[in-house]
Each structure stands twice: as structure tokens, then as C-alpha cells.
Image 1 (cartoon, rainbow, N blue to C red):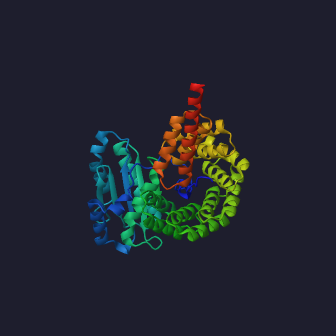
Image 2: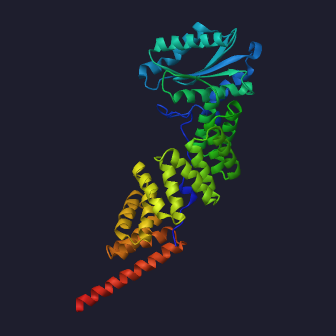
Image 3: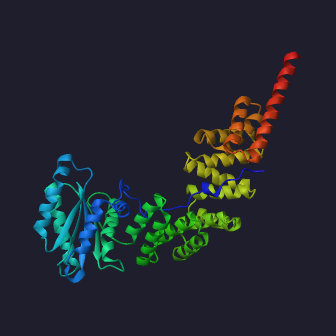
Length: 408
């Protein structure tokens, strides 16, 4: 009998929100203000809703002074922003508010067309940059845009500056589907899955064939247990891009959760064929082949997984089980030893290592301690209980043999 590996031990794959490696994910997210409803957020939201805006057309921008700016620059940021704002606009053409000492939101109108609006914004950005001698981060949202309400535009600009933050100081980004993907990912990190789903769905309304958004929404459905919805999204994404490895892997994982092991192996093999060096692919494929009693096929994938991510205990743990099954006790002991060092409270690794040591008649006291600890961690696990009894028996046999030798 083999220890059961839980589905939750295998994670869905999500890329960086825009599909490209960011310079650095933001340390703080402006979009958090949308959900926290801070005083500054609420105050400006109310000002915007009551502002008399001709033609009901406007631009909203959130601007932040670079976090690397000196303390003296940060101290004068508000005064400089106010002076520059009024040199380009006036109270009849726009409003603004401080979000914190180095971040500001503004709305302006009274421009002929989009290009004129962007020229005004660039002029303001240039003046502030020159006066403070530091780079700015800018997020922009416009109204009207798609079917977003006037009250949502401020929130959209906050999501856009989070988008810009992925590229570092000096960048400006306009609100789009990627901004919503980033906002959704933030909510996903906070385990606010229902809210994340709304963001991803809004993103797909803007960009219906965006693979990252489809994958992100599928992952969200996967972790909330809506597996059929997740499966459909992954299938639709594969139709758009048959070679997208993260989606193929995620579809394989969905089938594994649904106990469709043949289909799970099929998609994992397909993902492996595209790139044989993705840790999650190699680990899950190795696990599935091990569970299917195809250990010879499993070992190469597990070895690859352990090389790609030597800090993950699971590949070593599964290899330990395979070697234990084969009675290759030296290799089993070495694999379990690594797994336990990486994850000391892993009951499967502790139990397997204990049995491997006891069968080799080595470190029997430690073996008994590890076997008992595995049962303490999972008292209902019959495999761990059986192994504990086996270790106890082997320990007692060894003690009896020692006594026999002593009196011989």
C-alpha cells in the first residue's frame, strides 16, 4: 500500500500578470485602496462624483514619486505637484487630491481629443519630473471607456498604476485587461477569490482571447472547486494557443483532481514534450506515473524536478517511496533523508525514512522516533500505523539479537 499524496500538494500555474517577467512586483498595491475604502479614496471618489464635468469626458491619473527618492524630495513633493498642476490646469479644468505624501490623484477635462489629453498629462508629468529631479510612476484611466461607470474610473486608474509598477519607476500605463489581471492576481493572493473572479471576467470582456486572463480565471475556478468551469476555460485557451504549457499543465491538474488519471497523464506528457524542464510539470507527471505503478517511467521526471527545484521535498519523498518499494534501501534512505531535511514535519517522508533505517538495522532509536512522529502528525493514517508497528518489531528483533550475542 502506498501513502496517498493530496491534490492540494500540487499548485496551479499562473504566470506574471502580463505574461512577461516584471522588474519587481510592487511592494504595496494602490488597488488595495479600492477595497479598503480609505478616507483619501472615499474623499476623492465623492469629489469626482459631484464634479461638474462638461461633456462628461475626463482623464483620471494616479501619480507617485519614485520610492527611491530622497527624503528631501519626498517632503516637497506635495507642493511641487500642486504648483505644476496649476501651471498646466486650473480649478475649472480639473481636480486633485493627495493619497499619501508622495502619491496623488488628478482628474482633468476640457480637451479636444485623446491626443490633446495625453499631451496635457505628459506636460504635467514632465514638469513634476524636472522639478523634483526624480522619476514618476503613472496610471491612467479615461471616461467613457467600455461599460465602466464614472465612479469606477478612479479605481481603474489605481489598477493602472499597479500595472505600471511592474515595469519600475518612469513608466506610465493605461488601464486595460492586463491591469485587471494584476488586480485579480492581487485579490487571488489575498484569497478573495470571488472578487478576483470579477476582475478576471471584466478583463476578458475587454480582451476575450487573452490567454493569461483565461488561465487566471480558470485557476480561480479550480481553487474554488468549480472544476467544470475551470476545465472549459483551459480547453478554450488551448484552442487559441495549443502550445501554452501552463494551460496544458493546469488542465492536466484538473483531470487529476477529478480522478481522470489517463487524461491527466496525457496532458502532462504533452506539456513535458513542449518543455521538459518545468518543475511543476515534471513533479506532477512523476507522481502520476508512480501512482499508476510505472515507477521506471516516473523516476526520470522526479529526478528532473529535484534538479530544477532542489528545495522542494516532494520529489525526493516520492523517489524514496519508489526505492523503498524496490527494496533499494540505501537509495531510499538517502532520498527520504533529503526530504526530511527540507521538510521536517512531513509525515510521509518521516514514515518512509523510519522504515528504510529499520530495515537496514541502522539508527533504530531515530527510526522509532520518526515513525512515532508520523503517526502523531496523522493519527488516522493506517499506513503510518503499520510502519510504526513494523519499526517496533524490527527494533525488538535487533535488541533480542544483541542480547543473544552478549550471552553467547
